[in-house]
Length: 106
Image (tube, one colour):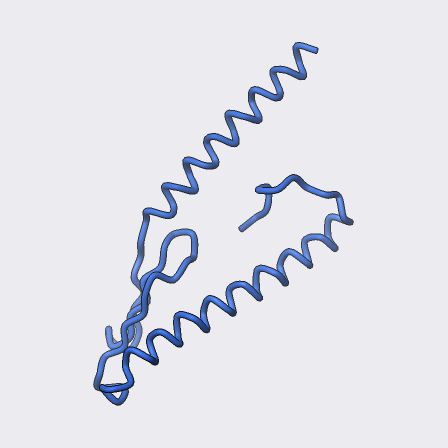
């Protein structure tokens, strides 16, 4: 019984460390550039897009903000679909083992 309690304590510690790491990753922000800096994407280390900037010389100035918002939304939609496809593949790979929540790769 002592071994089981020790394992439960280690699991709780690991879960706490994972939560702390996730919070840390959420606070890290990177910026990707293309077109010599004409297009910028800000993203968290958890792969969440925080913003997109497009130089006005690439588009009609009065439509820039709409295009930026649409790009963020489209990226979010694609990201969700990619995660769903990955989860489906992982479930097929693990044979429906029923891994605990939060044990995913993403």
